[in-house]
Image (cartoon, rainbow, N blue to C red; front, side, top):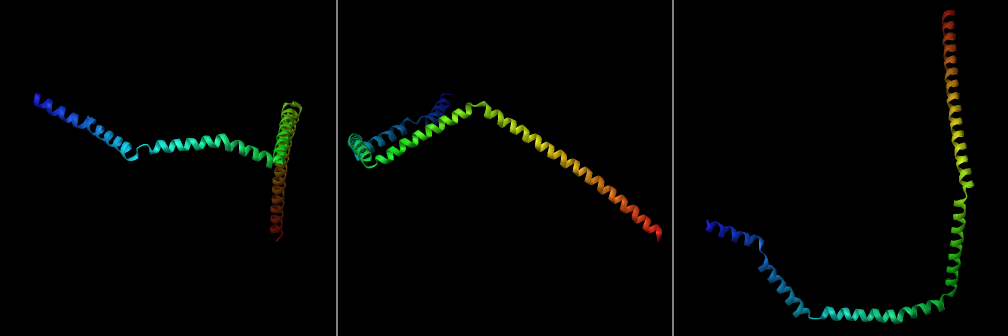
Length: 152
């Protein structure tokens, strides 16, 4: 029985215990990073950080000053455009609050629907009258045809 448990135990360790493999992989990765690359990535990150700090401290303010000196008309035009947009927004808000405009739109919509219904009813009546007249004409010509055949 103990042989069976030993066999099961060894199978379980082979299938589910990966410590040996993982330790080897971790050691290999550490060796790769420490020996081959050393501090190259850290040095590159510091260089990038220095460049970004330099740009932030000097170049952004310089670019702002350059834009302000070269493009003052554009800045004025942009301010006027913003004021116009604000005025349009205010006017639109005023009209949205105006309920008389909404009421008149609803009234026109109701009148339009009634007009369309009236036109539809008139079309139906005309179609019925047309069909009636058509039947009358058919009957008239049938009678006329019969009278002509009788006279012969």
